[in-house]
Amino acid sequence: MLLSIISSCKEKSLFKEISIPSTIKSGDFFSEPDVYSLKEVDYPSKTGVIVVPENRSKSDSRLIEIPFVQIFATGDQISEPIFYFTGGPGMPNIDQYSFPNNFIENHDIVLVGFRGVDKGCTTILDLPEVNDFFSNLPGDLTEKSTLDKMAGMYAKGARRLQSEGVDTDGYTMTEVLSDVDMVRESLGYDKINLYSVSYGTRLAMVYDWMFPGKVNRSAMISVNPPGRFEWRPEALDQHIRYYSEMYQKDSVNGSPQIDLAEIIRNNSRKIPESWMFIPIKKGHVLISTFLMLYSTATAPKLFDAWIAADKGDWSGIAMISLSTDYMLKDALLWGDLAAKARSADYHFDPDLDVMDEFMPENSIIGAPMTLLGLGTLGWPSKLIPDSLRTVQYSETPTLLINGNIDVSTPEQFGREELLPYLKNGQQVLITEAAHAPDILSIQRPALDHMLKTYFNTGVVDDSQYVYEPMNFEVGMSFQTMIKLALMFISLIAVLAVLTVRFIIKKVHKLVQGREQ
Image (tube, rainbow, N blue to C red; front, side, top):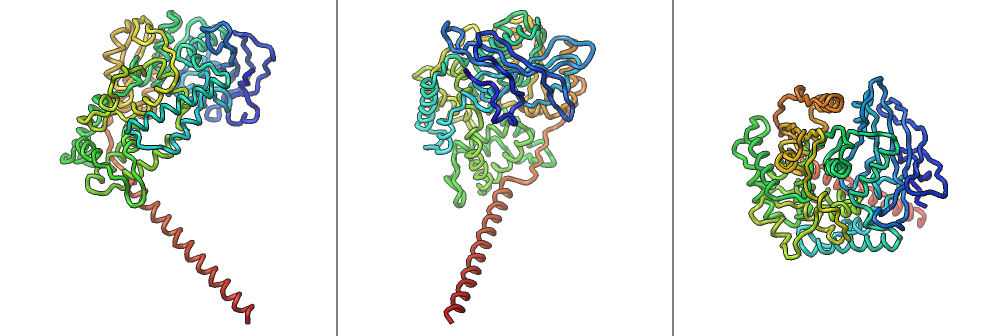
């Protein structure tokens, strides 16, 4: 029997320990009163688990346990609960989120764990094989041979899990959403609201298609329609050019003479192998360039590093490369990324030249994050139904919220590919905002007001948003950071040498004194 709650790591979990009988069957449901603490406020809640098949397509499937947290509404006028789907894939859905504070007066909040990801302190879909691959990278991530070796590590991890009795076909989005619906039914809810972010928006879409009539309202931040686990070079180019135009208009921190897009395009072709003694890995630099465009808070430092490189100072780019070494290992539960991506989007023509497709010569930096996704091709995939891999018509009231410079989930994909299929859909565009981190932080009171009003009344009120231009202020640059770090290391080294010399002299004098 799988243990959902592990007492040895209880301090790392939101769960209290739950007593579960030794004999269980599918559908068994266990919960106990608990407290969900947010910002020094304790909310009455329940912690529980539900027993489900690992693979619903097999009658003899083993059983696993899915955790959940139910936080109770505090007000007198209570409407449909809000179920939350987080981003990823590869991240737990049960965490110490602060957003319940905004909705808890009128709605129960329910967090359902993602199978293979939320399970106390151990997770089935953690792949040490892939983490070890990133720790001992056998080549650059822009090289096809390196991607093939990564795929081999995914395949090795899958074989290990299968040898341990894990049915890897059981970890698809449809299985996750069937777990969610079993929790909904067991908690006695007829209809629910969905609140989702990034990858979670895909889950919200698919849940609505799988269980029509069960969603009251759905609010999606950074919308990811079917087929868009795959990043496109042309979309990224478009956003970098937009950043470049804004930079040229910034009279305080920008310059009309600097074309960021062309600086990045030109210098990304001539990245040196090292700066001083610090190696620079092209793939790391391009991936971090993409990731730092996720937020307008990190973009200015990135652009500043590329401008410095254009002037011959590659120290900031070296720091970006170095930081990626530490970022990739343990960044995600890679098995979850593989299971979701392969079962939904990542299926390519075997004759496709992936490097030409996703890293074309004429692109600014290509689509480097898609290369990481290509490694998942080693994972054995079970496709979810075709009807859930393409956009379906829905009458569910749905609010799409996007930033206009979102490199990860470009707003035009939601507007052009999903919105036309939503009879009661609306899109709100947050200007000069990137991916979800921006939307969840820039003018947060305006977002909270809009979401609270929407879930309570169905009215979309974005009136509290005001235009804020992009701020390209750099603060301390990456170039300064790495140079200060090297100066500090050099100072420590000098002090160490002087200390050793001092000790040696002392010892030498003591020896001489004894000899006399």
